[in-house]
Image 1 (cartoon, one colour):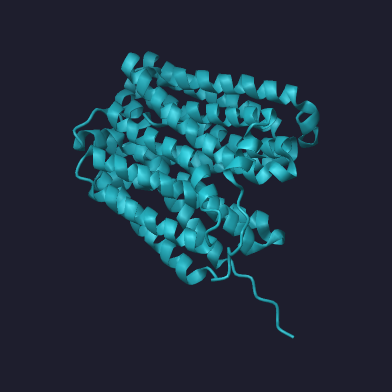
Image 2 (cartoon, rainbow, N blue to C red):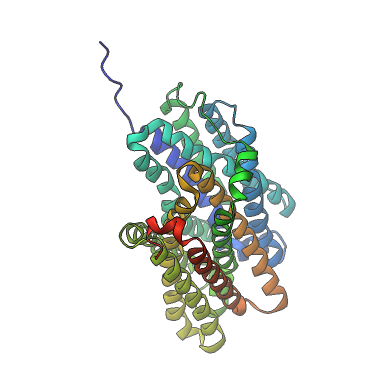
Length: 404
């Protein structure tokens, strides 16, 4: 009789290195926009479109590419995707001009949008049903760690060594993940995995309760990225910090976000998602309004403390919202619709990121960077109103998740 195969967490950690690389690349560029604009001989608004296009390409391509590659061997697909992500980062590092960098960002979005949901699905297979929750926590922890550490460290590297070095570092990290998947992921893992078709995804999203909940996610993300895309410009204009010190503000935001994820997860378990979602959205609206108020009202020497307070509240509330919103979505989608709904939730989040970057650019064109916080706050208030409506309208279907 053969001994049972010993379970190893090693493949999960290599998948997590990949999500860490994707998370760092996705969020770090916002902290480097002023320097990139100067180097690329473009306006800050035009350079901000690098954020918009990445997020939009991710949102639109992720469900489509995931469905189209449903028949592929998932292990080989993850290795190929992470290799392509590595090469796209090298292309971004070597980009001679703005448009070459734009192409690299689109390629990065395609590969990132294919890798993250694939890594989550593969993690569940690797771990099995009894360890699936822990496996998903490890893989998604890569993104949380990227927000807390990867983004601020990447911003510091970019500010001191040039923005290209940030892409070079992510490329090196992605190469490690690729090599780790080749040697650490068992060859039999991921064969004959069932992947939802595009039609199944559309049918799930068409359900009113799910669609409205996804729209809350989108509007939440829109408000956040309206501010986040131009946070570096905001801080350099209204505080005494110079561009090389903005990484410390991003570190403050990232550390707060990491704490927010823990608070959101624990609060959801104890209180139910609604009692986390609504205060989180309200707190974000207040934080964004505080940022714009300080820019219009205070002198630069007094603005920094207020800005840091706003950034801390924003970081805590922003990522406390996300696990609670996922629990809300599970409640309205039911067991059968949960995998597709959670996958689409990520796409709607990135769609919101794209809209937010565009809305921030529009605000800069029509007003000033000092007003970006007002616009972001308005988005969060809209998300709050819609979330209240969804909670009331579909109360009976979600009562088991404490929506009362």
